[in-house]
Image 1 (cartoon, one colour):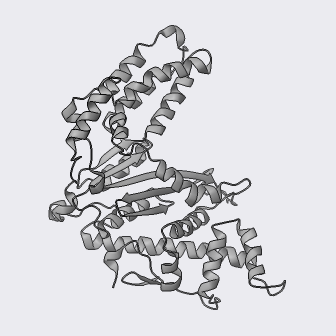
Image 2 (cartoon, helix red, strand yellow; image 1 turned 90 degrees about the horizontal axis):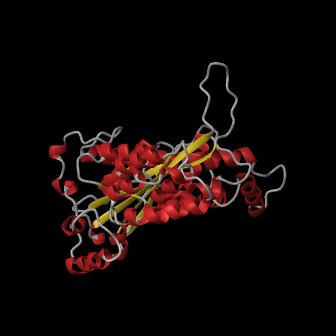
Image 3 (spheres, helix red, strand yellow; image 1 turned 180 degrees about the vertical axis):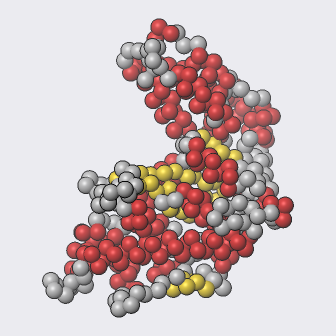
Length: 395
């Protein structure tokens, strides 16, 4: 790759056919919409290619994969340039000298400003919920959405393609893991993906820096509670305050799974306990939730149950469990459902069909192509040889 500011010029191999930009556009549109075999058939029909003069399936699939790789490499290279320029290590994302960073990128945005509305919401909710925190603490946790940036990271797994393995080589896993991160600010939204979680977070950091989305803004991550996500967030954004919120849906799913393996009897009994537990967590009352679980009647529990495990899970994520009820009442986000939709659009919808399996490179390349279109960057890439994620690199 050759870059000039934000411009990227793909290098061609010796004797490699040079395809038109229209061919590239059609190829990528078809590849993200249907199987490569079907896309290859449609492409040849569009080009009026007959057998003997047709584009070969292997040629087409290799070209699509190479385009996806070039998109990913261009984004990674752009991120490295932004990070180095801003004073960050391009491999770890760590600030080289945190004290010398621009103070604006270390400052959080303003808290919720309409205190009267928030106080009225607290008083209303007090009638049905028991809060763990006092009113002042509840209000201090609320952000101003107009001065905040929301990041929703998640992993999606697709079936790994079986490959020939010579004796002594390490066996590949059963799945390919793609990390998808949606970044949303008041005036823009972008989807970032990579088969490496660390690389995905490096691009996110570079994107935030290049678009001035860290400057005097509250940075909020919605996660499913996975420890590797928490670790990446904590390590990469150690130079500033970051808020991490456990997604409400995943919290309830975890409780449901643990109770299913702990409660005797039918599903109805589990659901009854879940409904009694739910108000504690909806109010952000982790202490009350743990106390409720620990005082369940042993007669309704199986000898081997997961109640203690669930209590540890809640206690370990206490700082990530806000008062969902208050956030919901005020119209603030409580869920990472945005990235769940992004996962579907970037990876799952295209790569999780029956009989499909993928290599790490192939899955990642196709995810990059899908993200390119969702970010409305396809025209920039195909016709102008540039990626718009990092405007600070523009010539």
